[in-house]
Length: 406
Image (cartoon, rainbow, N blue to C red; front, side):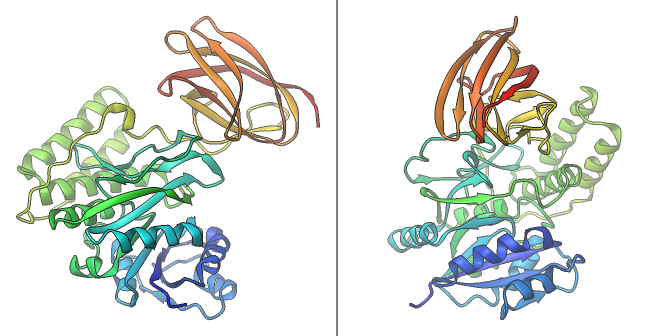
């Protein structure tokens, strides 16, 4: 069969995910070619990909100029009607790719379509169901790190399609001259989507198709925060009605964050320097983003997995804010069957919730500021304590395994 799509992947020190990337591209090979661009990796990524995918040609940038610049180099080698933007730490199967292709076939006014993206290894947790753009020009994923075990719903016309996994018309990407290379990291896909929308194109989300993304693999949160705010400043200066005022608004927010001690002085200085360094010029086109309700703004990122019980049978997954607090939900993996006893209290009024076993609802619970103790019988595998009010903060003051049952 003739291929309609080429997967465009950018790698950078990607040796830890090279095996998963190779497996993904191999599973798509019957209907999708691949162009891999490496941004001057220093961890053996290129050699490893060569061994895992004999015959694959990896294009080297020679120097790391950022994600958008590397994508543009790869885009110049794409000859198919559609281009699949695919992060090195994301995957999609052939059936979902086919659904995306059919969507573009049937909707000639759509420039790009993205699937419902789930957190890698946690199919009940959403990583992205579309793009949002705040009033400060910061892009974010709708539904980011929320426990949403149900089906994704119907097609949605959105503000944008994330570059983590999305299918684009190649001629649209070419007409837009690809990504703005002035974005080194973060929000380059926001800029691309804004330019597409200003030219009348639609950008859709098709939840019937699903993908997965390893959230937080690419960079540390400290470095990410600096690049995010500089990229937001670049967007505001390119498309805002008053670029100088937009820059001052970002600076004002950072000052308020420092005053409230939400940001330490070293981080504040790095972020302010990033804002001051951005010198993007106006495009002559104005784009005013509309802020989403607070419930749609991104949740705090989960810390790295940690053991929740002294015996190490229960290990954390997404949803844990810090220590043993959870916001809306706390997912975890049980290494074996066990009885789990949990002491929990709500930060606020009474909260009801339920234990989920994978995506299946199990025992209910209710707690308040006075605290409550619950005992659950678990089998091995994924589980989640989920509050009905997903904005609630629940504190876990005690969690232990009383006995193993399997």
